[in-house]
Length: 253
Image (cartoon, rainbow, N blue to C red; front, side, top):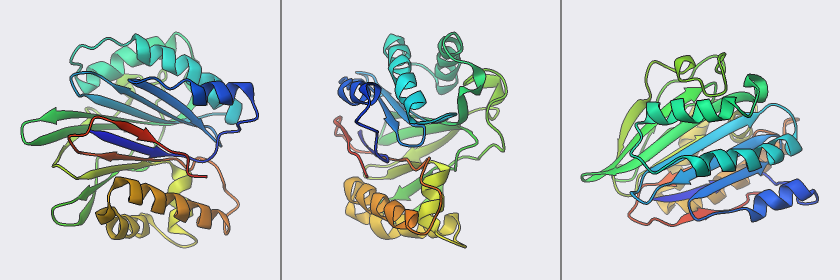
């Protein structure tokens, strides 16, 4: 499974940001993006991948400092074969011991694991845009899961505050799962645009592969910034369902 994630620039002039950028582990990654986004990944040896995309309340350094602690929490999670709901519950207990509930304005959690003939993905969403799935075999773009109207009111990732259960989807070899924050969707859709505009862009570019799609979305976000006052919360994560286990990350701007 290959993870390609891109995000707007970290302020590399700050010690916190430099430490976050340098603190990349083979199985745990936490990256703070400009505007308060946090992208955290945890990959286990048995192939299960957990990705958390969070909108941190506050500014860039809040996300950068939080990334250090988030990294420690993820690294402490053992390698048992968690259900997605069990993972969220355990993660919530540890995070609530470190952070206040209002540290996160929106959270999206995705788990992807190998299964017979492909991959099984599940998503739990609290106030983030619904993910997109690109079906490589037919070139179709689908939306995945549902979106809550509000962030979790109880705790950070309190499992009882999410939808009743994580939504699931089957991914075939070569399918792409695309996650975005609100700012990225707004920048790509443009004035008067909608989520359908973003779906069309993904459909046009995704056939070139996850890396090309990531680059196209990053370029589109930067063009969108030219006509928008909003230049925050613009993270994009692309997960490619493939036999490759390498995790690749890159900065979009």
